Amino acid sequence: MREIVFDTETTGLSPKNGDRIVEIGCLELVNRLPTGETFHVYLNPERDMPAEAQAVHGLSEAFLADKPLFADVADDFLAFVGDAALIAHNASFDMRFIQAELKACGRPDLSEHQVIDTLAMARKKFPGSPASLDALCKRFNVDTSSRELHGALIDSELLAGVYLELMGGRQTGMIFEKKQQQQEDASGGLSPRQPKNRRAQPLPSRLSQDEKAAHVAFLEGFPRRAVWLAEEEAE
Image 1 (cartoon, rainbow, N blue to C red):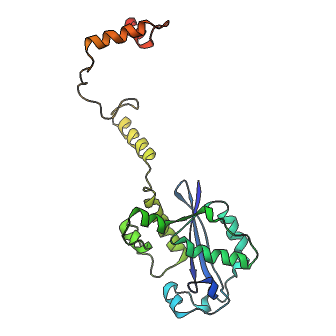
Image 2 (tube, rainbow, N blue to C red; image 1 turned 90 degrees about the vertical axis):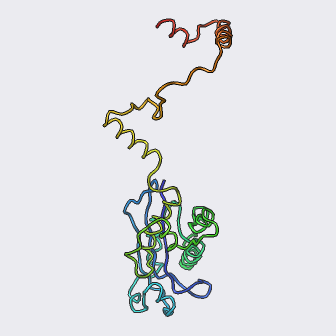
Image 3 (tube, helix red, strand yellow; image 1 turned 180 degrees about the vertical axis):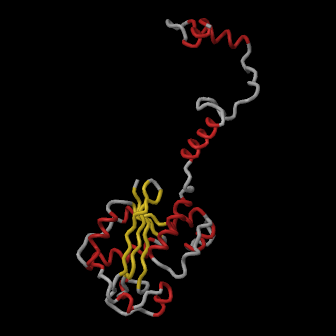
């Protein structure tokens, strides 16, 4: 299962007002584990950088002046995303910008059906609690010490940690059980076929002698001998 956690930085809040993407950061997950594969670009927005936006991400007009246009990297971006599910925090914001940029350079839209919004997930799981990325990092003890300003790639890395926690944590039950079994086998503990919570003394039967006799009589009516009775008689 392939998923892409992604984030964008922009010149403002709305592509309808002429705002553009200035940074895209994507991180690949396979079976809910980071693979180390990323897609990260800074983009020339072909416009000025409002002071309010620069205060958020620190990207100046001068820094972005020699960076590629979105149209120059659109095919690489689409190839990296492929048909993977897209995971973003407040996904509608990022998707509005991505779709606007794709449309402007004549590329097809991304399917909205493959988008997962961690903001909606957090609000459903923790109703009434703060659900910003920073608040969720604090809740799940995701380390934010390496981030001074917002950045698309670093925020994607933080969001990947949050997303995995929202989905139940990195350690799945199956992996935990396998590791626990290996530890038990190495220490001479229970075998794989033995129950882990076996009682020291089995509970006494709750069946009366009459009920047991009735059950045996019922089985005698079948043309073939019950397997467990045959085994008992052989013993």
